[in-house]
Image 1 (cartoon, rainbow, N blue to C red):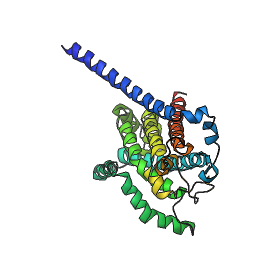
Image 2: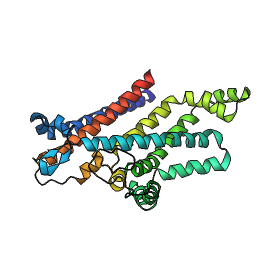
Image 3: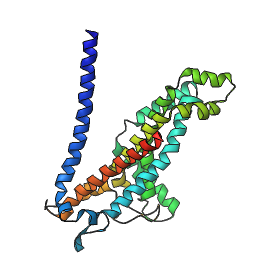
Image 4: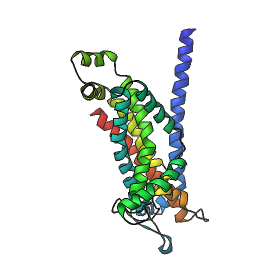
Length: 281
């Protein structure tokens, strides 16, 4: 009876995995089919290199691609050291009630709606950035990246702490027996043993950074331009999808939305594959 239950559970898990893969492929197929007129007309690759100017019949998404890369990459660059340091403090360096309080605070932050982060950014972060930059609206790449880092950090911290906690106790006891300090134990024992957990948290954070809509929509300024500095406004692909309104479903303006979706899909997939390949090496 126990063997039959295990067999049924294995089949159910296999079915769930196959269903997940199928749904992912169906989503990609949906975007490709609706964007097929762009590819047939030879417009798809021009959309990837041109700017956006509907008055001149230009519906390129290149500025939005650059805005997405700038905000997402900068946000992950801010969030990774912050998350790694916080996870190290919670799991290794801090003790007692203080570590417990930090862990509970991070868990609570994961349940806060994204729009709340956006409102906090508008009323607290944007004025601060405006003062620091001494001009401009404050709604720029830097504002969106900083708030995006705060948004994705709790997820990374929880994955990092879980991977730290799974390090065999015999390893940490051996480090203690050799007289290692907490920092030495973290650097030489815990971090090397937690590579896969750290990579998993990083992959999820990258995917969320590329796919987030509200933070970029509320804080980045939504200017259709290639950002040249942290103080420039920008528009991301997700924000562009939310903002484009086209009455004609056969128009290039409407079809450009699906081009944005395909590029986002490829961005995320390529990033995950590169991170996995680097871990294998």
